[in-house]
Length: 345
Image 1 (cartoon, helix red, strand yellow):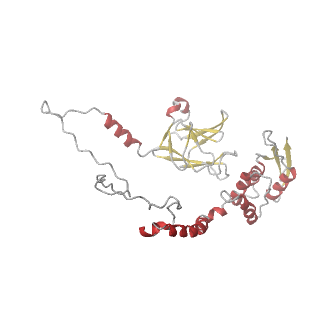
Image 2 (cartoon, helix red, strand yellow):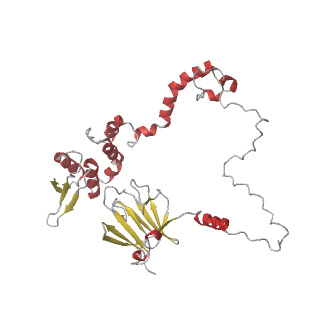
Image 3 (cartoon, helix red, strand yellow):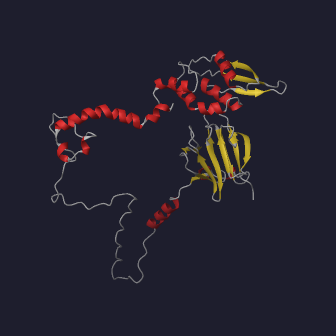
C-alpha cells in the first residue's frame, strides 16, 4: 500500500514533500510543528492532518487567518475530509494531499474536497425519497384513490416546550405584555421591577424609585461579571496596556500602533518561553517592528549569527530605529553568541 503524502508549493514551485507516516501531522509556524511554515500570517498552531479509516481529515485549530479550501474558509475545529488530490491553502502556501504519488493532477478541481457532515447522507436520502414517483397500490384498480397517510407531527427539539393549540381569539382575553402607564411616565421594563408581583409593577413611583438603584448598581455588576476582560490584552481598555506591560516587565513604545501593543502583550508568555532561541528572537522582531527578519549563520564564523532586516517601502512612514533593534537582539539572543545586524533600506 502506497504511503500518502502532501506536496507544499509556494508561488507555484514545489518546496517540500512530506510523507504521512504518523497518524497526526501538525502544521504551524512554531518550532514544535511537524510541518513548520515560516510566515507572519500563519499561526503557531494553525492546522492538523489526521489519518483515519475514512481518509485524511483536515482541521483548522482556530488560526488567526484561517485555512482555505478553494474559496471557502474552514470553520475552527470542524473536520474536513480531503479526497485524493485535494488542495488547501495556509497563508501563501498551497498544500496538496496525495493518497498515491502523482494523483493530484488527475482529479477535477471541483471534486477535490468535501466536508465531513454526519447528516449529509440522511439529507440526500430524504430528498431522493420525496422526489421519487408515487407507486399505485396493488389491486387498487378503480375502487378509489389510495387513502393518504396521516401527517406526521414535526419532530420536537430536546428541551423545547410542547406547542399548545391556541384558543379562539374571542374565547380568551388578551393581557398586555407590560403594564400600561401614563404617556408622560418613564418606560416600563426595569430589571428590578420585573421581579415584583404585578400589582407593584403598575406603580409609576416604585418604577422610578427602583430605577435609581438600577442605574447605580447595574454598571458595577456588569463590570464584575466580565472582570476577566480587563486583564486580557486583547479586550482591555487602551489605558490598561502600560499597566499590564509593567506586570511582565515589557517596555511599550507609546508611539506604536495599538494593535501591535496588544499583540506583544498577548504573546509575551510564549515569547518568554522561547527566549534565547532562533524562533523567539525572530518572532520578537516581527511583533515589535512589523518586519520579517532573516537570521542565519556562517560555518566559518562560529557563535556569530547574522540578522538581516529589509525595510518595507510600503510602510506608512514608520522609521525602524537601529538602536531599538540592537536592544531587542541583546535581550533575546543566546547569551554566548554574538551577532551582526544589517538593515537594508
